[in-house]
Length: 93
Image (tube, rainbow, N blue to C red; front, top):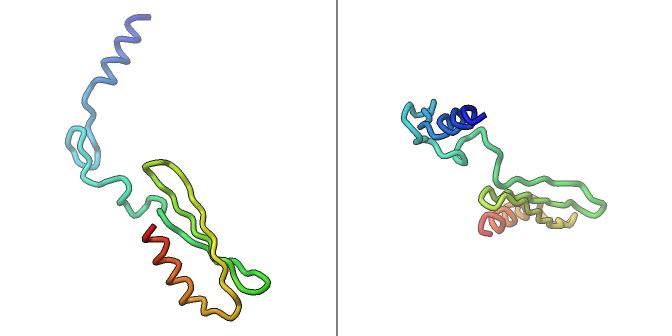
């Protein structure tokens, strides 16, 4: 049984070779800057009875938390203008 533990410990302590960079333990691309990762901020627009609802979902990778914000867009308001204001507000948070 001790030889299995020793084998696993030796295997875990070996320096690993990174396939992307062909070097030991160093990755040239940060994981959160890759285009195929999930977006940090996204939004949806839902129809409502007297306008629309704008929902923002934000994911904080460091804290591993999701946060949702909602805005109401009245039927007499310009949707594009309101969305641009809300996007600016959310990116500044």
